[in-house]
Image 1 (cartoon, rainbow, N blue to C red):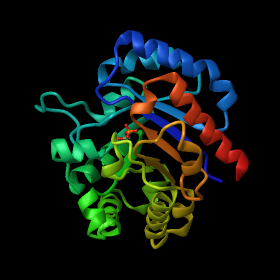
Image 2 (cartoon, rainbow, N blue to C red; image 1 turned 30 degrees about the horizontal axis):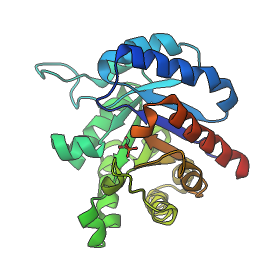
Image 3 (tube, rainbow, N blue to C red; image 1 turned 120 degrees about the vertical axis):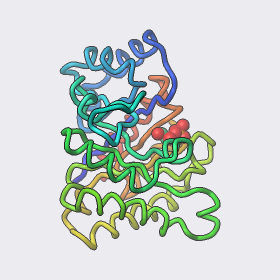
Length: 256
Ligand SMILES: O=C[C@H](O)COP(=O)(O)O
């Protein structure tokens, strides 16, 4: 049985006051949602305040990216060690916005995953195809290559400590969610790919779905057998929406 995990990726949004209110609202209902894992990924500058606020509340904190380097002359970068040092548990790696807007290749994503694991963080490795790739029928090959690069960098055994997030690029921030069937098919395909290396690891690895998850569609997505929670963008910015989504994840556990 895999514990569902819901993570809010705030992206480039928020203020100190917003972070304070949002986290307080999530914490207030955390005891009702104790059967699932919940995390938030604020912008770097708000991480210390959120870490201090959630201390002991069972809410994980993550960064939205990490450097592929440890230390040195890399202006603007933040290392996985630093992220761990300030109390984070998670780090997103290879989000499609990083891949598309900041040129992160599969190899870079592999190296970042390696750094995250070495620092003791849980990397949330994001994969997903563009609309053009889907329309050309290449989605399994594209996502397969993204997964393969991470396996090549860290080895299959390390996937015990990796979370995968399948986020079709065409569904991110567009309001156009993958259908439950499309999402389930890709999650099953990722699991099958990992099973070729290790059936046990494939069975235990958590695969989140991300891309326009909202209160109205979360339950049906989370009800799919290979979907283990969600990576939430826009709907993670208000406690009202985020908590409905968290409740849907907790509900999927009870229904299974
Ligand atoms: O990291 C989150 C994803 O990019 C999904 O974003 P979204 O829920 O705003 O579509």
